[in-house]
Length: 206
Image (cartoon, rainbow, N blue to C red; front, top):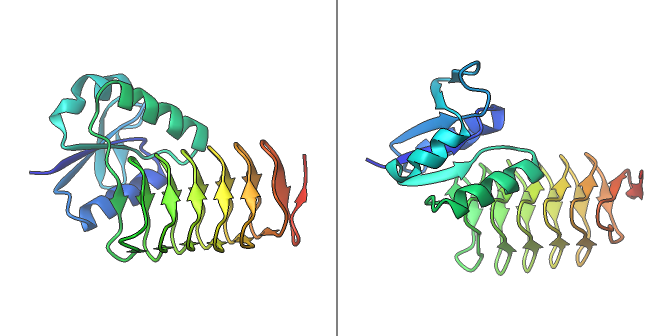
């Protein structure tokens, strides 16, 4: 039996669990630092906190961090990696990922997403529902591309950056580390590290 442990019992976690079961995992088990106050996540029980997962990860055939926040997800991913957990990538069967694309460990690709040839991701990346990642894009560790976002070819996104719902990014644009791109933004210029931008065309808010 293939058993998957998920760290993070949230709405995002429910989606990851659903994808895992649809893609061939037999059983999913949640851990969350809010346990025991949080004892259920949708139809699945929460059985312990993160430290308990660190101690029992060897009982599972795979482990993934199911936390939406980029910085927290990346931090927890590194902790599990250091503990020797078997980190895995989960892809929805209704996603389209080129055989010539590359996905890093701990990443998740949701239903309707498209990842084209020579696109690459680092580890613990989320490519959310209906997002498209075109040819030769590079998404660094901990990136979250939100639902309905479209990256043209050769886009580069830095570590732990969040690209909001429905964003459009022109080809060749470089986005720095730890940036936040507001929902519906249209990016036609580079974005610096740590910047928060929004609008059409996107402008820096802070």
